[in-house]
Image 1: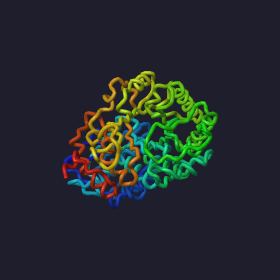
Image 2: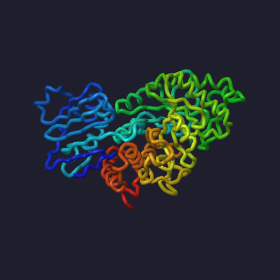
Image 3: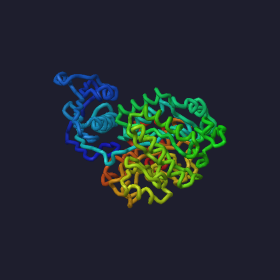
Image 4: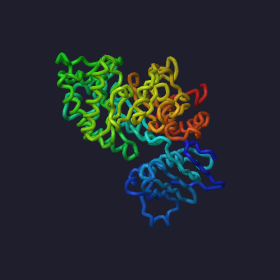
Length: 475
C-alpha cells in the first residue's frame, strides 16, 4: 500500500496483511512534555502504562533523549508506538495525524495502517517567513499557519514584524511605534499589531509544535513606520508621512543621528525579552541609498546590540558584505544577484539559509496575470518550488554552511486569509519536502499524486489553495 505522506519519509515498510489500528476508543500514553499537546491533537484520553493491558488500542509515545528530530513510528496489532527525542516525537505525531486523516484503501480516515516508518530531516532549519507588516494578520490566522507548518514538518516561523507600512509588535520602551504605526498598512487599511501577550501566546503555541519563532525588525532600511512614529529619527526632526504604498528602498535610518543607536537598543532589547529562541533577525536588505562604509557600520551596530541581548543575529543576504560575527545566520534571497559575497562569508564560517526568490518566494505569481503576487523573481509554480537541490543552488557554497531552507511570503498584495493560504498551498508543501526529505527520495510526479490526496484534508480544514494544473491537471 502506498502512503501519500508529505514530506516523503526516509523509510516506510508496510507488512502484508497487517490490520489497521483504529483510534476510536484508543488511549494515549505520553511523556509530560508532549502529553497535553498530543492528547488534544489526537483527541485521546491520557492513560498510564499500567492501563495498556486493558486497552483495545493505544498510542504510546516514548522519549529517547539525544535523538534530535529523528523518530520511528510502528503501528500494528492494536498499538501505535512513536519513539524519538522530544522534537522527534512531535515529528512522529505529525506523521501519525496524516495517517489518521488520509482515507486509505486498507485504513479509512480515523484508523492508522499497519506500518513501520523511520524518518528524520535532511536540514535542521526548515522555515517559513510571514510578512505581517504590509498587511496585518493576527493570532487566529497565524495559529492556522503554525498548524500547517507542523503538519509538514517545518520548524521555524520567521515573523517580519516591521516595514515601511507598519509596526506590528508592542514595544514597551517605545509605545508610540504601535500607537501610531500600528494603525497603518499597505493600501490604507486599518493595520493592527501583536501585543506582548499575543506574541508570547504565539511563541508558546509554536513551541508546543516544535517550531521556533524568529522575529524580525528590519533595519536600517524598510523603516518608514519607525520614521513616521518617532520624529527624532529623521534628520529634519519631523515625522515622516505614513506610507501605504509598496515601493521599497526609499527609507533608512542614519548612523550619525544620535537618536538611532538608543532607539535600536530599546526595540531589540524589548524584543529579546519576549523571545526565548536563539535568533533575532535584524533585516539589512534593500538599503539602496546608503554608502558602503555607513552600511557596514550599521550592520556592526545591529549585530553588537543583538549580542548584548544574548541572542544571535540573522540577516538578509546583503549583509554578507559587512564583517559579521561568527554566530550570524545569513539568508540568501535575491535569485537575481551573484551569491559571491554570501559564498565568501560562508567560507569564513558563516551559516546560510536558502530562500531563493525564484524557488520559494511564495508571493511570486503562479503565472502571468495571476490575481495575487508579484513576479520580480519570475513566475513560481509548484514544480519550481519542488524541483531543485539546495546543495546545488549555489554550487560554490560549502555544503556544511547550508543549514536549511526557508520559504517566504510577502503580503503587499495579500489581504485576506484565503489570499494567504492560496499563495502558500501547494507550494509550501513542496518547500517542506525539499527541506526535509533526501534528494534521491524526491520525485515531482509522485509528490503531485500525494498532494492530490492531501488536498481533501485542506478542504476539510478550510485551507484555500491554488489548483495548480501541474498537480491537479488542466480544469
